[in-house]
Image (cartoon, rainbow, N blue to C red; front, side, top):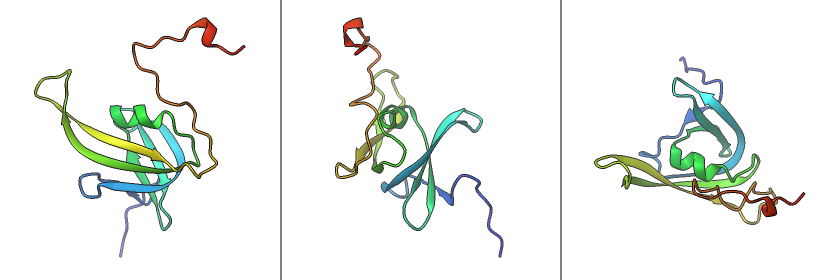
Length: 122
């Protein structure tokens, strides 16, 4: 019997078939594939699983450090408020609060937020 080898992980997560996934974030790969997408690799215990990034997922994962215990929940397709007639994949990203890994930042910066000089601690 033959099995195709995936150099990053054992399989790729399909949120339409599996609504949530949890494990330890073991690596973040940038500029992968023809669309130069993010790929997140999590260890779910018995295997390593690749998760392709999306605009929503990338924004939420920006606050998560490698080695964090995470859960990603697929909330389904949502209507885009900015692009009439288009939908996007919506996700929730949760971090294990009992895990000692430090989260990079409280939340990703919104496009309208600017860093002020008084916000810089040095």
